[in-house]
Length: 364
Image (cartoon, rainbow, N blue to C red; front, side, top):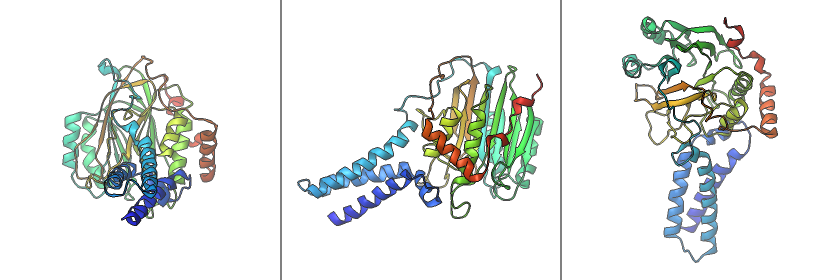
């Protein structure tokens, strides 16, 4: 039995240690995803070791120490996405509808044909902006019925799982579709005019994941996130970045994005809001994200019910505020972070100058 637990504990130790490397191979970066599952498996293993092994043996306590160290390390990453951690974004203390913006971010799954269920969610939650990922021409033909209520649109139907559409009640200015890193992976950029008269810079993203069927490494995804982060860090305009980033909230690369951009994650201190995989409860993690600048507070964030996709949709309601309670929240970048970000952009030969800055061309 000791040998069995030795093999199990060493395996968990390897799975825990591999992501410490910044190697971008898909099979290493993929281990960033199941930290919650690894935490629970380690907790179960630790309980079994304490229950079944000889506690007078030094070998037993060696295994317990290794399992406990791995458990604590995995917990360090996921605890911020639980309610025991301080909230990064303060709750909105007013309901000023003129400064409010409600967004549904939905990876629809290109082959999914349950558009009616998505429309029911739209009617129920009344977003001001709907952004869809994986939407092709069939989805566009269904979504165009929304234009009566959502007259401002950006459309990029594709049949490669990277189509995108945005439908907005609010005026969108200087809208652009760009292919920042890969020639078939679009992103969308615009300036949204709120009823209050304030302008919000928005970026909608869906970079490809590191996987054996997509990119062998995470370098393309990471480079896109870094140049977006560097670009928004230089503006004083309120910013929202949302989409399926094909990276988990607790990964080192998502943390790098937050450090470089200065954007906040409203899930910190509130929950994981795991949006993928909708069909397998035991394999879920937060892939769909919304980050925002310190100009906003949070009114509401919800994972919506299933609509036939392999992703759940994410609903986020923000309120633009002059309150400075968020001013000192978030993550700070150090010299190592900046150097690492620079290496990622140089690896893909991309630069923040490629990212549209819609506020620079707006009409006052």
